[in-house]
Image (cartoon, rainbow, N blue to C red):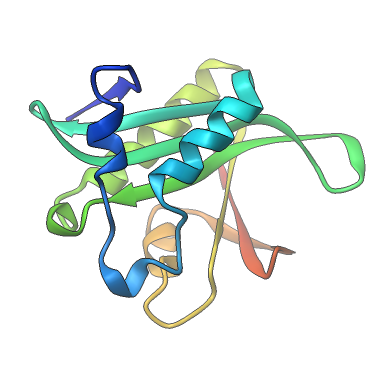
Length: 149
């Protein structure tokens, strides 16, 4: 497994990735993420997840983004995680989250944040197994979780 930068050569493969239909309301499509990465420039870290040379997912971190009303509360974490429907259950999501955490650590971060939709069939169990813990906060109706790095 490896992460690859999004390039003119692979962006169409990234755009073609889609999650299972029952997960479509849980995560934005890759095209939305790439638009946000463009707008947020150096605060977004988009990557294609590859198994050998086959694209199996997309991950994007947010880096030092102000949180809430406090301009000094800068947070980093997992912004998006899309694992292709036919590639789920093979460890690609765990790998991608670990890679995001490693990138945050390399930049001096000590915590990784994530949000998830609190509903049956959502990713809460996945994030809890990885060590994220709810902070008691909500963002856009989603649960905010944090992982100490």
